[in-house]
Image (cartoon, rainbow, N blue to C red; front, side, top):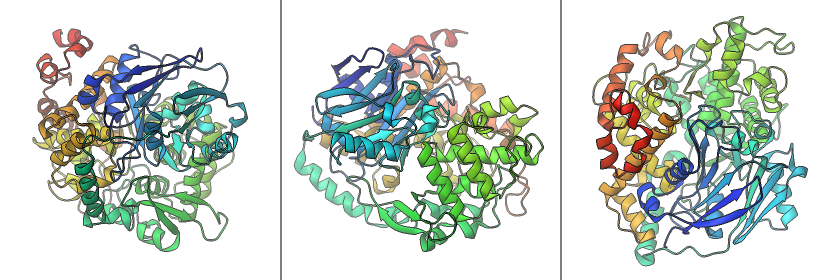
Length: 619
């Protein structure tokens, strides 16, 4: 095969047995790769109702057909898929760097981990050599420390490593998997799934060549896209980076602040992308095969956290800054470093801290719960100490490490109203009360509250629609973007490069065809995007999720924006939510309960999965 390695590696952690099976070529074209292939393989290898933290929940590591090539941003990504311990539906997380390239060069399209090891291990994958190595000396180490030790043990600096930290070992539901020291497969708790398997890390070295079907035409396309990525479509990422969004969203009053108590942060300039780049950014670097370079490395220049180094993006800056009411950049950078050290999804971590602060200010938690700490909004010391407690699962951190949904249930006393999540996944940096297209995208997202499954906020933020109005037609906007985003994370290319695909699906289909030699039209690729979102929906239905879970956080539905300005009083009513859901389901060809119909599954050539919903459709 061209593009695809053609092999799927299975690892039984119970017995240590490993085996290789050929890649299902029908799956390759129908689900592309990355999250699409990963979700389909997970479905084949799992049973309904599996406990996310049990040995019976497979963990699928998958890459895309373009991985390992020199195509800009496409050579480097990888994804993890499993049932999420945060949402109890399908979980997936994508990361970039160089790890995905190395896995493809080792000769695999996917690795499926089954069972759980009796003792801590890490996988050492060296082309055809597959070994489970003792990881007892790595317990308690950060992902960065783990990476360094493994490279030293194996005597090869160029080995690529993805690892969990202490949070994953302790089964925190907001734990992530980190490669290249700061690049996280962050959301949905994949680090906890890896920890539940006693799998500390995955180390890969690959030496095989990656062949493309039409090398001459492919290289011409590579050259063209290199130039596109040096142009205006990617300028934001090359300059200020995503942290530019702080002032943009603040000006629009669509930046959730102090756990959704406000939509605007009065001290936004102190944590802006402009200030971050002026005072803290020391270097901007890129992933394998990337022509943009977006990774903004920051170092604290002075003060108690002097020398702290990490990378910073809008979402993490927002979560530990304005969302917690904190305007001290050095403390926010330190918080980000702690998340990397413990292996925690930094978005969820910031939202959890803000939830804890809200609970404290409303009298649901006391200074005693925080070991004498005054956990008010704006207290940067509280941010640092609470993150330490979450990472180590000590004190109140043992509850908060469960994520806001389960933590709220344990705290009780009405804490559920302060827990801002969808399907159990913590919110991200878009105030859904005044971004109603985004509100729909977040509500129906198969992995919970997340902007990276649909990008629907762009319609609202850029003024392409009336962002304060819920109306028919938004369902199609969300559906089309969901399908594009699913393809981006299945090919896998970087979302930051999406603006360089001037012809959209036509460009993506051409790229796929040149690499794989499998003829793909834009129409066929669009259908693959729809198929990927549909398989995710089917998995969630099988696991008990449905229309009732396509909802919004309590404050979005019940607490109008209080800030003076153009969006004062905005929120989403239940009538508006239901109108948007009905419109979306109709656009998808699903019934009024959000279940894909027999006709839709036949249209997508997914008849084999009809049994998942057959009984529900007959009711």
